Length: 364
Image 1 (cartoon, rainbow, N blue to C red):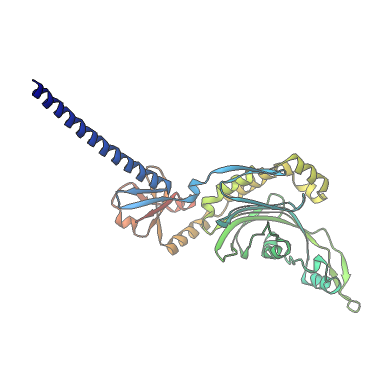
Image 2: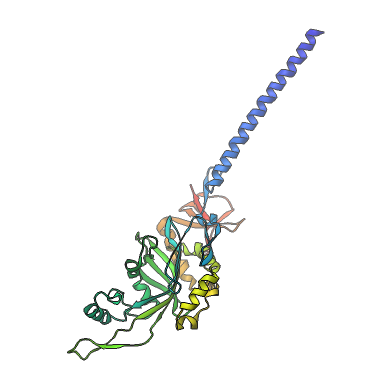
């Protein structure tokens, strides 16, 4: 009887050991699966049976956070930097991605002292060589485009250890989208940043001519030169690397729309503003005004430009675009993907889909 009991207990113990072993293996497999899921999701990569991988775009992971100081508040992408410079009427804000500053929102209320002509600047150099007007740039064409053509000259004159003006080299207008919110034009343009990378953006600024003040070129000459300086109000732009504006326009416009100035700033601004500022802007609601103007012009833009530009970009970089028929998400797939893929879920996009932002990349 005792022998039989020991035999039964042995079988039970062996069975328990087997169960424990199976349970341990199950837990190990489960942990490995969880680790793989976390790893893949964490870097935004989803594998499809080892045949191809979907990598989500960075703009899909952007989270807006609150930023404020004693003068203003806004929402900015987490990890982005906010720099400021200037007094109340010359206040300047730059919000940008430190890893690629071409993703940016730039806002300036007023700059002044621009020469109207080379003759005016030469006159200043001759008679007042140490005056700021002898150093300031010339806006030969009193237009928004004319101002941004010389924008790069602002940096060397105004940069500090804590604020650097953006670089807009080879500024070229792609389209004039109409009148800006506060005068001037709203332009879509391309340029090269400080690293020589091609970029694009939406730009506005109002070049104001307060009137003439004529002087003689010299004692002998009878030629008159207008030396009264120009002012530029509301220099505002949002930019991205080329062909990324479609993906980031909404994010950047959310930054613009969220801009609100504090009572402290408004009180200081109201006591310092000039007559032109009083006539064409309400500082408290300026963020919403700018945002509405950008959205309106963006929606009215020539969409064929975007379609052509996006196609050219894909051809250059070796992509073809497809969309997910279940989610309608658009992806940049490696060239040849549609030849390799035999399923029904991913299909080539139509031309109008080039106007939509992409969700990521399909890689081998």
